[in-house]
Image 1 (tube, rainbow, N blue to C red):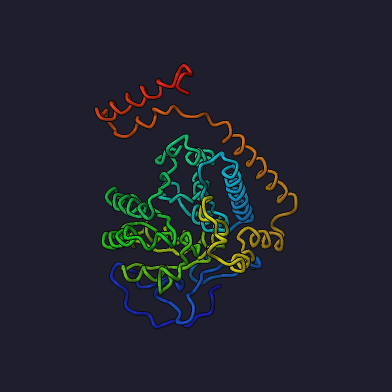
Image 2: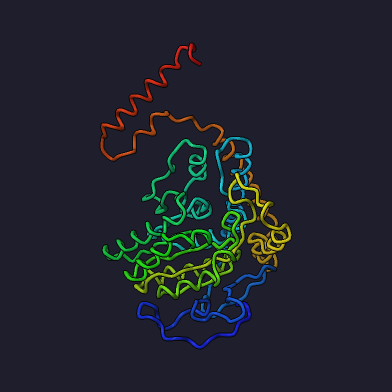
Length: 388
């Protein structure tokens, strides 16, 4: 299903772009409103898209629902823990679960993801324990997981930098002759960064197997997308010579289908793809932010009816693909996860402060050794109680 649009005549594509592009791509931009790839309406009605067919079993649909609910649960628990002083900061994904779970489940085992600091749902799909995510925000680890074990890079705080990392990794894949692909996550705010444009250029010129997955949640902290661009974000891809697609970011099925297509397109030697997941950040940018100061309540309320979990639940219920026992089971599992996260965070041991010096360089370094010794002497000066 697509938003009603008038299709322009196709222009001749650049050599790096395939002759035939999905109708959700930038080559079929509507004069009135950008086309939106959608497979599940906000009311929970299953629809088809000619370019993005998706066949799912009832078990797969129930599994996606479970992912959405559990990801939202531990995200909510993390927000509560930060409010209680247990975490230094938290960047909630509330409202963006479908974009992350759909794209995360589209990846193959060998594919590699480069996240920002909000991709908790993608981390879940890559089997990263939520407590490892929370450990970083509590300040007890530097990431908490092995990126090469999970094929999920450590969180990147520098806005947009991970797109260059992902592009370089994808260029390396082509040298290795592998058929894996890379996906780089970033937000609408990061799309204004020079790093992202540079990544687009390198990926296009070198035909790198990378999917740029932009979660357009409408707000770059307090700056609306309308103040950042005069055209829909996915249309920027055409200027760099590769296709762009806008997908309903609150539709987990559409995100799954579009991302699966984009990754297959990239891994097949056709070069990069830009996917714009049109979604909404229901909460604050981070727990240090107050969104009521810059956006209207009416806007947030209008997005509540597009909730990704509600629409999938409505579909499962209407089609008889899940019963009340299933929903109750998932709810009970989510509460169990919340309890594990809460107790796990509160029981995290404080790290040895000198560990901060251990991984500055790969090899021993005289200056770091000197700084470590100075810190140890300073800390020792407080022992004995006289200087407390």
